[in-house]
Image (cartoon, rainbow, N blue to C red; front, top):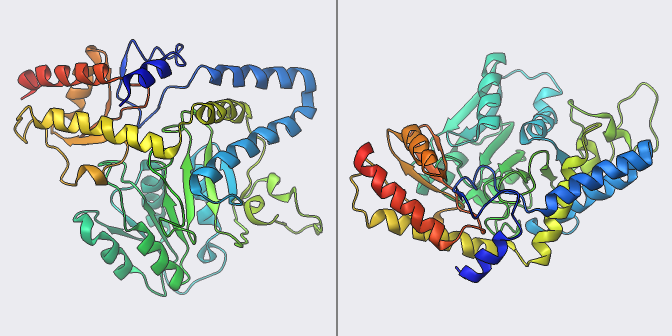
Length: 395
């Protein structure tokens, strides 16, 4: 990585002190550039000046957020509903499934994997208690995952919900498009969680064969936009009528019949309700910053791969026992935006590294290191030194 670029970039993140701390937590929450604060101030000023008339300005910011996501998806006219969290958007998706709108003579069936993020995992697990059949397919071995998921799909399947990158291991599910295509052939709605792909991997929907899929993602991680900036991409020409529906979904219903719940077209049908627009003001400034500094998804992928390689190869050369730290079984090229290492003492590693100024996290027995574009090679080297030192005491 060009160190002049990394060090120059750090000057735009003064508030988050990225030069003073080793933030290997970028897969969870990347630092915000200083312009994000300007967005929050603008939000306050517009509210103070325009009172209820602020909403037209707020909706312009929401459209700016949509446009940024459209660019990442390679779909200029993408239908995108916004929400505060992916969970909120997943609920809207689930409530639009036909199986929840009409009585069935069989259990509802949803196919997923054991590698999903908590928002999806927890909600689907809870649905089991109301006679929903949740078919959970094990991610490993990943080279046969697509085939094993497709084999679960049949005429009784109501949805398939899975990830483009698995949040525990950071392995890219390169064949997710094959699942989406198989689901389309069977007229099964397919939702793909792209939170760990968006803006750290090029995610053109055509290239990924995901034009028929619903895509859920957000700005809290690699987009540096903070909380409240999640999105649901709706397939082109799809018209929904979700049961869980906010009053914003009526904005574009021109022929609303009294007593009937109407829905606007495309993204409007999945709209929510009154929200805090500060998140979109903040994101709009950040997304302008990304474009001004030419931080494209292609460039960010190159930076990420270089940083992951430094960490991966640095740990590999330490010659540690797999009982201490085990590197992933997949190849670096198939790794997304963070490095996940297997260890029985993952949480102890997090605490010990935190005391040395290295911020990271863990999920079960997975110790996760997530670099970001503002992290310098010197900081990565210091992190590796801390890891090597701690390996002696934690082995």
